[in-house]
Image (cartoon, rainbow, N blue to C red; front, top):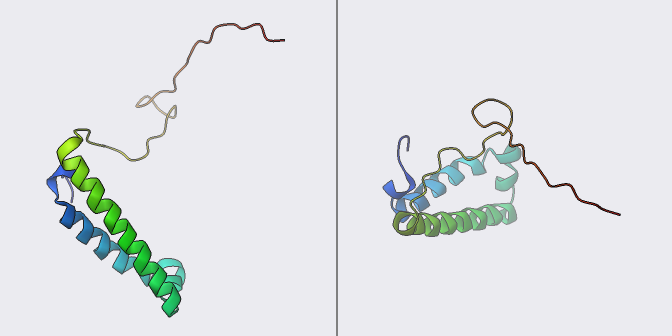
Length: 96
């Protein structure tokens, strides 16, 4: 998916990617915790399906209504010149 924007994939493709990623992680998550019993496998399936639903809806919405293209998910502030810390001057107040 490198060099693709959200709107470059279909909602169904987003759903399938989430299913594939979740399926690959279930066995290895916390040393097999989600694959240990029928109950945990059921929980893993429900979590995966819920995330698939969310991704499918979100990608569908972003493809048609949202023109913002995220570049980074998390970005540190104030640690370098790339995104310097903001300094905001506040007015003096007379607090009792």
